[in-house]
Image 1 (cartoon, rainbow, N blue to C red):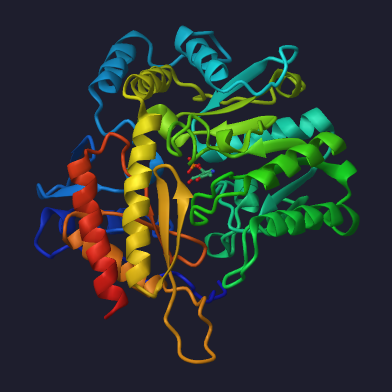
Image 2: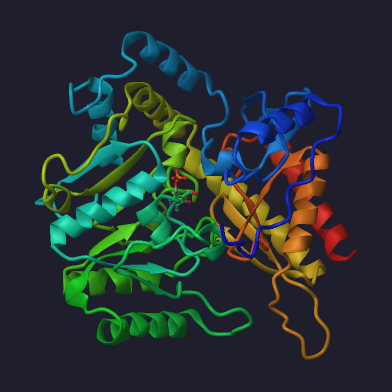
Length: 457
Ligand SMILES: Cc1ncc(COP(=O)(O)O)c(C=O)c1O
């Protein structure tokens, strides 16, 4: 086999020897292949609200939420009860074999929460699957069958999953090395944000990037061959870049003019994370299709595609689905989780969490030169770190080593937090939305102190 140049990041610091965590991680390493990435040596035995307890009984404030999943908090009693009840009634039937109520009830709830139509003439429909990548794949299949076209436009910094088609749309090259060939008919444009170090006002940026898209129809792929444009309105793995409102409005306009299906990937930003049910609400623009997953299941694997009925129903019967899609227990968990989001008003809570984090991060930015950006929306906030360089050096050189040191340090002080960004130089906060103010502030104290210490080291 040919050797490949490894660009893998440094492995996580191992847990303290002689502990149960060390034993468990050692057992993992013997039988779980290395391709299943290990972001941290943390182990998890149980969790409640915003606190995870490891197999040695140590508690960690959770600023990761299992990558944005546990919005309603770990082990929410209503979600747990709904799962217990459903598992005793019907564990599995397969929606293609028999229609069961939790699947239908969840789709009814989803189309009510996320109407994709502007006028009453076009209803909204949904389908259920199990993961975010599947949701993205299905959205693309729907767009292709609905338009009879193949091309898909996506963006730099995008993350849409790891399956072959979703992976083809994903931007981070390190996650893709050696796995090709990737799916054809994928065209990538720069995400609408300023270049590192560039100073440009938003209106000029939007104009430039919309013009770039229009030109791409002449020099890259004809608009008549494009089935869909897929964009994360707030990029997740890409480092919480927020697409300008005017850019999304421009996209809507361009898609309408050319008969292109507009897809907003809400897998990470949806279900209250940004302070609204859908991340796209700030733009005033609705997509034709949208994939969702993560927080919607309250911890169980469930995902969906929601879309305009006029697009969703142009797909040949049998094209979509799978054995487990919309499993009844996962549907019951999702219905209970959504009810909790409503009861606890997690949109308001996400805004409050986001404001608290933004204030702390912008204060830190004033003190620490390496903090080059604070960005995000609602409770989806990130802080970006770059190196301090001498005269003539690149002031936008990412600092992933500082980020790694901070994350390791935070973990040693009882805070679980993860990185983001194509260069791994952002720290992202994705707390459960039920986190208390005391836990949030304690976590931010640990994080901000650590950034200050490591940046100035
Ligand atoms: C925006 C976005 N889309 C798709 C995915 C893929 O979801 P999954 O990991 O459930 O396949 C992710 C996962 O992080 C995501 O953030």
